[in-house]
Figure 1 (cartoon, rainbow, N blue to C red):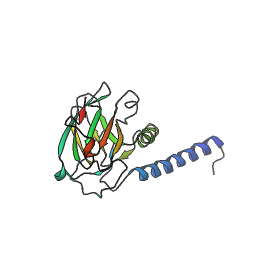
Figure 2: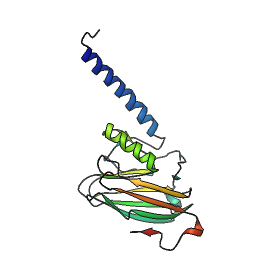
Figure 3: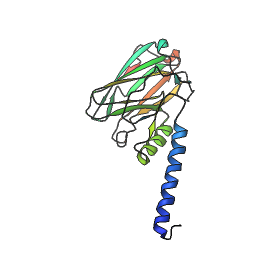
Figure 4: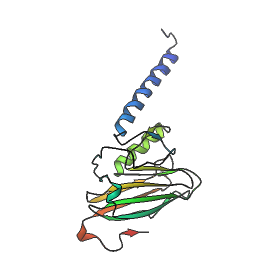
Length: 188
């Protein structure tokens, strides 16, 4: 039994942190494949996974891709383009290229979801997780997200590595009905 209240408090704090980390990781992890640390690898679409509907779409099948959208990531903490228009129902391959010297990532979601995920990453910077709607891309490397945008609306994407989104590394995806789209679906 610990007699020192300070040690007892630290041990309790560590136990709570472990429990919170486990619960947080369980909440974020979907059956989308193996867990990888932030910045360690790029999501592989050859991993068998159960597609899970999100408010902003669902994991796309690579053989259903209708177009490839190149997106550059830089150490200026920017995505280019940072505004993307897609037609509802399209399966898009977002082809990411990290033109920087540090790791970046792209995570799709609602503004609220991204904010919550960013806060969790600040609290647990080495948290391991993997999902179809995110890709971690090392310096000079490339990665991809294959996503079916089956819900109309305005959604967000960001690099949630601590400090990156806050420095401006974020963007918008507008999912439009077919009647709303134009030939120029991507703005730079």
